[in-house]
Length: 285
Length: 122
Ligand SMILES: [Fe+2]
Image (cartoon, rainbow over all chains, first blue to last red; front, side):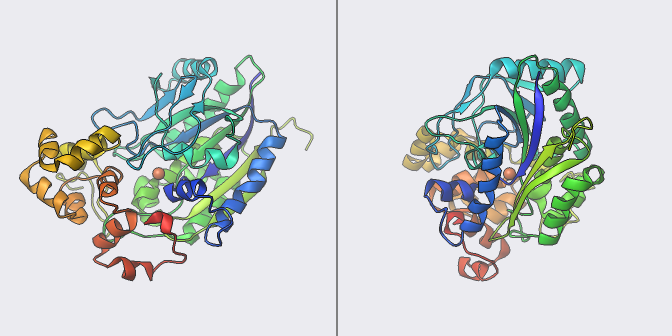
């Protein structure tokens, strides 16, 4: 039976990917960020994760506004690394699991009535590629199979935080009805505070970031009723993507074990990480 | 709610990327998006004018792209920042120069406002 083991919220700031590829892990400006992922990666290995479902957003790598899905689920066995305009990063193609993905598609679309766009061909964006190698081994190949779930956070109207929460709940149902023994972590990526355009370029808000990190752990449903405008006012326009974390948190039990958290605010974006262990009521601990 | 922009536009210094703005900037953003392919970058580099014409860009849009007037492209042209970043990549203009211009600052001035400078953002 499928088991939902944990949830992770992570930023996906592109410069992290560049620093990673340039081996900047020990450089003082980057060390606080990369060190923050080490306990997360070690813990994920310990708990034997086999699959990850990543809720993320594309940034013009694969999807364009001519036809823009609100939610798009990947159902391939392999996903190529995207070229975002600067060339392709040196990472192996992301390993998928078509059988597991189709199961999720059936459950989400039919059982939970989420009208997803189903993608047999999907090119990976920094929304996935920044956090993935920080959380899992990728040499010589990925140590996990990934199911990408792309969310529109670029072109308004966007799905609501409430809808993401519901999607998370539906994901849990879908994972738990899979007959094989997969051990799944759901990852939500994006944020934290940042704004990349206008006079307000460079806006950051560490108070809001830390409040969000607290609430995603202990009081996540209080984040569901916050409007897009309020997410943008507090975190910056592009930080509306923080709501994608609710898709991760909605998949977990109301109470969770807090495994790890990291926060770093260097230059343009709040960089956050949270690792939460699912805590079913029948568990001894 | 403004009928033209699709948003109340009450957040200072912010152009929320609404359907209305996306409609206005469709050709511009389509051109910018196309630069995720290496062969398109090559074609654009060789002959920018012809390449932009093939995406149906207006004289104003072509002018603003040439001038690297990111502020106008976003505020007036319906440009999307994530798409425009691919145009910036062609000339080595990363997020910081693009952002500093929108704030009306030089890169040096902008960098003074930051906690930790990261050159991977440049
Ligand atoms: Fe993003």
